[in-house]
Amino acid sequence: MIKPVLTVVAAAIVSPMGEILLSRRPEGKSMAGMWEFPGGKMEANESPEQALQRELLEEIGIKAKTHTMTPAAFASHAYEDFHLLMPLFLVKEWTNDPVPLEGQLLQWFKLSKIDTASMPPPDGPLVDRIREMIKPIP
Image (tube, rainbow, N blue to C red; front, side):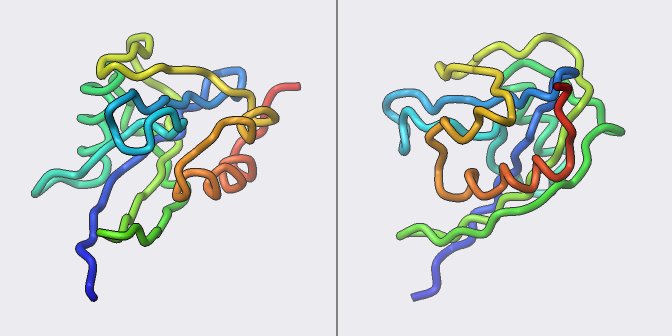
């Protein structure tokens, strides 16, 4: 059976201290309680960068600065009903403070502690790639 492909975009938002912002999925959504990179579904005629800017503004109230959105990795994961493709961008500059606008929790994680966060299958493997790309401040 050929599964439909769902493309979502996600951001590893990196603080000046090298911490990563994760969003905890709220009750009532699939995979409730799991921590994930903020982002969401691409709409028709959007580039991944445009979709990510829109999703970050809608979901956590920040405006990512386009020149700091660096493609980092992508996940490809087969779920039962669809196949997920998820490009992940590093975001190092933005305006506004992140706030939870969709009933989720937000938390900054040190890279050394991010493995303690229960993450959906596509998100977890991307952590090692992020570690390779950024150097936390000791």
